[in-house]
Length: 174
Image (cartoon, rainbow, N blue to C red):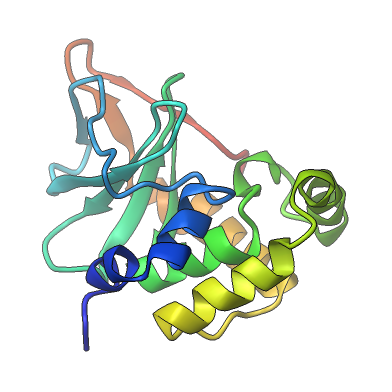
């Protein structure tokens, strides 16, 4: 199977959609702070967002590894297990950071705001998914999975600000 990172780089329209509204850019991966996982597992930066946040692969392996997101304000959360899951999240619910209660209602309200500026959002999403060979689950499924990963599985992925030894704050309440 081809690397999904390579596929994103190869398909310009998909990369543009992931860059915005997904706020995910493979050319940004510099986290401004020295960090590590409390478990001591490997932490590999591989992408970032426009506000200084960073996406990290956790542990050994390839694109199937768990993915932790750290914002530039000292918050972090496990957001996906594997790059395909992350890309589906970014395509289906690019406003995921603001879905604090993981509800369909909250997501619909946020989507309405996005649609004001991007009336072709659904078409762009569909083209990006097709270019990457991904089938997209519905919004409820994606939000339920984000909730599970961030609040349950994520408890084993605590990001530490290395110079002070302090953990990052969880992005989502358990």
